[in-house]
Length: 293
Image (cartoon, rainbow, N blue to C red; front, top):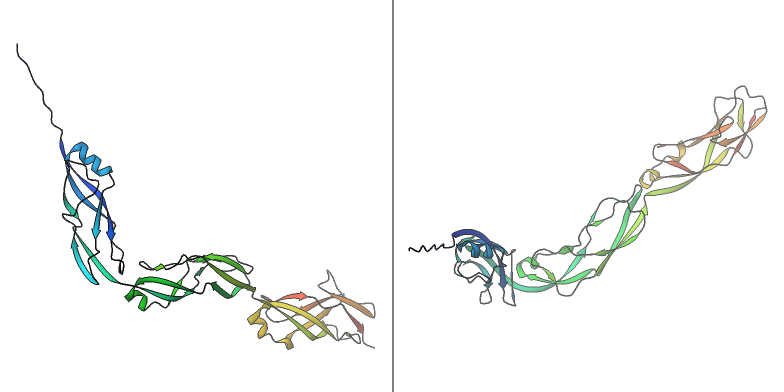
């Protein structure tokens, strides 16, 4: 009577797996550029083991505590991989080397400045701002901080703003720079209307196309208040502003009272420069016109 013995070995496999990088730095040094945080390696071994390696939190600790200021190239090949399952052999590091630049870690007090995106509501503008605090102490690479004039906040959206407002401020720190103390700031914005009010007195009253009519005594001039963009009103020609009175066709009376923008004659209209952007804020009082004697 015969006996058969069947032996099946687990299939070998290769799989590229991710490995995270952690760094140990000297207390007085800091990296000038962002450090690589992940590489891949080729893992070989039993299929089950390589799959465990792929799902495991593999890590390499790069010890830079004995390094000094300057740039250097470091090999990752041969550094121990934490969390690697037994039976797995690692090869083909990608990348296999690191470029590291270290600089002296220093502190410096720098100015803060705001960053804003968007535009206030139409006819409004930001006239002033303040940051509290206005300066901050930071630490980072000596070479970077030597040329640093200021640090900006993260962009604050002011789209549609119509009133002075205070926002929480967050810093947009360059890589490698950090605050010495926790930062909690506020950005205050002063927002004002870009419109200006202008009151013009002595505006002459004229009667349209009626040569036999004149303003009654005491009604030869009116006062009008205009509103418009500040820059426009600064240069507005007030000598070109008129109050024109329109009478009914074939006027039969000897006097009429005209009101600003009445629905029908007698009515008064204003003629003034830049009617496209300047509006009448306060209309003139009614005026009386009389037939000449």
